[in-house]
Amino acid sequence: MTDPRVGEYARLLVDRSVAVEPRWQVVISAQVAARPLVEEVQRQIARRGAWAITQLAWEGSGGAWTREAPDELLAEPAPLLELVQGQADAFISIAAPENVRDVADLPPGRIASVQAANATLRRRTLAMEVPWVVCQYPTNALAQEAGMALPQFEDFLYGACLLDWDAEEEKLRRIADRLERSSEVRLVAEGTDLRLTVAGRSPQVDDGHINMPGGEVFVSPVEDATEGLVTFSEFPATYFGHEVGGAWLRFAGGRVVDAGAATGEAHLLAMLDTDPGARVLGELGLGCNPGITRHLKNTLFDEKINGTVHLALGRSYASTGGTNHSLIHWDLVKDLRRGGQLYFDGELVQASGEWADSLAVTGL
View 1 (tube, helix red, strand yellow):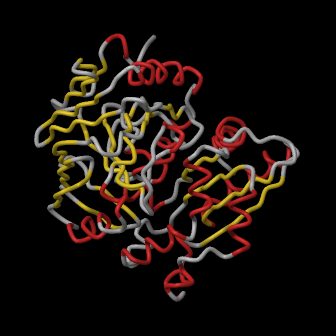
View 2: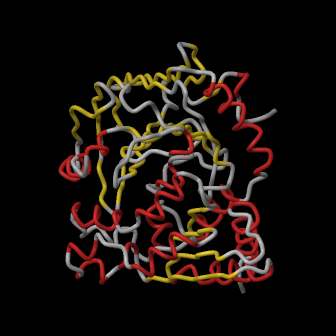
């Protein structure tokens, strides 16, 4: 018997996240283990008089074809796929891995080629020209990575996703409005003192429309103005199945000028050398989801942990004023809950993960 929460989850994705309208062409990209959710999303789309165009895969990033295709073909989008990316009205991506490291054997160059082939989709989504949402369906692999039994992970996932998103939006807007009035953001913690300029940028909130779970305020920093050091000592960072532990980045003039890691350093440096934009910050995100309180080794959730920030290397969001271009967008999560401080224009707005009273995201 299907968990009744699957139906509620599907309605949330279709009704709120992408708000499907009649006669829309909605692309569902998913892995086969997500079948219960995919079928319920299909039903919800059909009931709204729209088309559900379903693309299923066994593993991430194309699987066997991605491993075998010639380099020049891998980076070139198939004309039919590019047509879909350019003309679809909404996109729903559902990850349901059987193995969270299923693409860990892809070298950095092929990862970049995979990203290049999705340029049309990336342009439309990052500019917020089209509704889109990325989410997950609970699998044993995700539960194991989180250190949980599957029923525990199911409860955790639905607890972080099935929120009163109208109420969460009101809380997030207070932070976004305060950030929009600011020119500089400063992060201070052990091994970290980083300044980012956000003057003239337009912060946005993810209140269940872009990622599910949502629960963040995000903005693209001014590209040439990030200065200082940030150390990601609390949590490992993962990207395309590769894990990097204890990463640190030193910025000058908006660019990473030095970097290292306790583990996985070669992968970190390779990603930084993907293209010129990979050494620039494309995003500052402030995690605010009250249902996410612990690290799962799952970036979709970890970047929303209440009391954390995440910094994304690479491409920025045009919708927030960002102008940085890169084939990568890699979110690295920094935990501020143990003595970290967050300043807007020199004012302490968060200490040890707790917002100032005027910006508190728990309680109204």
